[in-house]
Image (tube, rainbow, N blue to C red; front, side, top):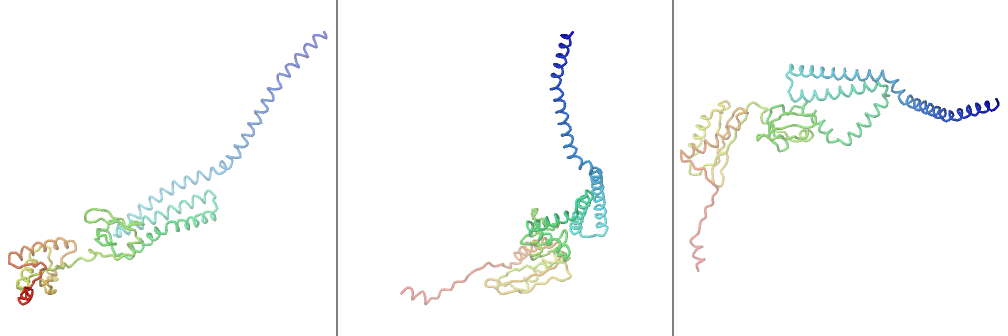
Length: 310
């Protein structure tokens, strides 16, 4: 009997000894799981607490983006109805769009409880940094405002700016885009444009073509004047009011220079200019009027020749 009890006690002790490591493993795993859960809970709890605000901020951002699109569409239609200059309308729309998007971002950050003091500080710091890094760009931005509000030129005008001649295609926030007669696109910084001399060739409806023609001293001035006037009258681009004029401009070394002044519409300036250069030369040739080239007459004194021979 006692041997049987001893055997049973040994068996129970053996089972207890074998079960202890298993229990320790279970306890350790449970402890690690609890710790991991606690860490994850601490990490994600702020996110879970902010989740409603985050969802609302995302919804507000999407709605705000849609509303900005609608506002910009309304602004564009309003500018089109008001017949505002295309360049100024484009520039103002760009500025309005930037302002609206900045306001949208600020509102979304405030919804997320980002302190406004921090937002203002960040914007101010960023403004200072951007201002120092992009001072030339800010100069171009200011130049764009000066150009648009002083209106020295408008879309479609043919101008000369900083040595470039071409047609104004657009004035963006930073650059003025000009298309040259040979179809090259030139981007000139607005700061350069606002500080340069601007020649607008098409601002006025009419322009005067000034041409100079030299005739020989042996030719008749009245005949040359008649030929020039007849040639001008025959040109279809010529305007008769104001009336064309021809007068003697100067007495040069090799020619008497006549100045021809004739008015035309601005868009016909170069057509008339090139037509008159060709037609006047042909008319002078038909009438025997010479267009002299520079020449020098050399006179040799007979006494000087004899003294050299001696």
